[in-house]
Image 1 (cartoon, rainbow, N blue to C red):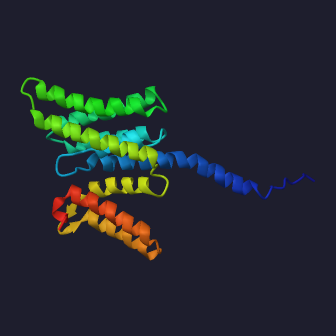
Image 2: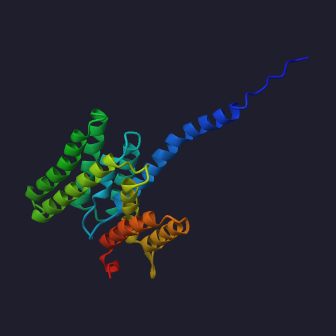
Image 3: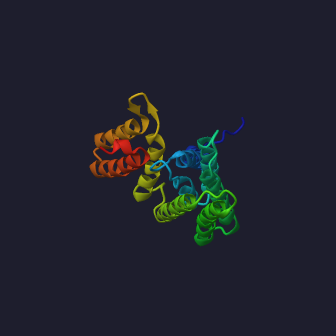
Length: 229
């Protein structure tokens, strides 16, 4: 009679954990790509686009490249048919940040200097070149660099995968991306944020709901100032 092999009771659990560990990196990179799409699409006050570069600078080492790809794709679609100089500067800045993070892994200062410096330098070059865009482009590129640097630094200090300040920052980028999308009288950003806030309240998480409402509300007003009243 052939001997039957008895499975250890912990083997099914170990197999489930192994399969989850294999899927988790793909889910993280997919989420980073989607977050990059939202960050590259979000526009603050009709002119500023800091989230794509900020997310590329601030996300962990296993996610920043996928996020940068999503941000670059959104920036390209945002300027479809009317590609602007600030969009070109942003693409160069995202590329410089990715190259610096690959060349100096674990070192944040080179990535911040490369990304934000490329953004400002690109604005200066286009402003001073033939048929220059003027001081306005330099001003907006400098503002984008400051906001992106602060956003990326905050994400480095407070990772978005841990509940807290980092999660709220990531949520604000998504809210700002959805804030400019309307279907008739319905603002998609307001509806999505209200549903998440209602779910938090139903679970009895009053303080997280209040913090989420404050962050996403500010992002929605920055994306569409008509929502402020």
